[in-house]
Image 1 (cartoon, rainbow, N blue to C red):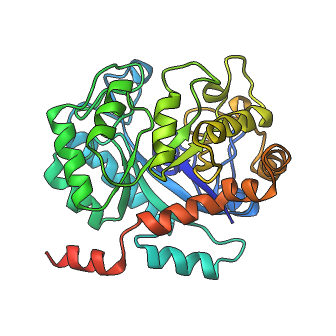
Image 2: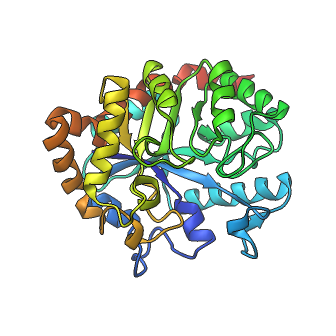
Length: 330
């Protein structure tokens, strides 16, 4: 089973008109059928909302100006996942059972919020958890909670309260898109499971969006995970990227952390870019990526990166059924 830790499925459908159950549009590649045909059995499906204030979103529809608008857009995306029967795995027991019984053609998801503004206040975290949320990335651009991509700054007071609420509810923290100071602030106070679902290494591609070695090392030290993106802009200064560029990032993370067990796939495919800006031309090429990883890092490491590492991490990081039942009763 291939595991991919970043897909903006609902955003692509509702904001871009690229439905998950239809055939791919020319220049794009992600649909349910394409994923399952490629051997993908588990994805992190996002609730992604875009602030109207972000320069790249200027004049576009399906953006928000207030926390209430962000909340409503997030709820609409959650409803979309329900409408296409995308199963959300909520507990470690559900994950273990799904992996044990998985057959090619099946697909399930972990619900990830990319940009935490749909959480109107930290007191609302519990509501989102009850609806299936398991991973939160506080940033995209600047949010009410922290600085983000091209938006320097640390955690706000609300951001510190958000992280405290996330920890109480056993959520996973996603560092992706956080500004450097926000990452440092978060790692100083966060004691729970930590990931970077989609990105690369700044040493290999020197852009703010990528993780510096100090953060990569800390994620590895905490037995966290880093999902390597397949977006050319995350991989190289000279697009289009290739599969070998993906391998370069994975190899660098392995060197910094001393292990390949903290590395996974976080493709971000179709997330604001088409196949012309991806390191692969179709999802079928994921097996070529696995082969390339095997040549550089060894076959067991490649198998872990393509799925096993994420499964092992989630089996430890997701809440137990007993924890979820107890929280629902409170």
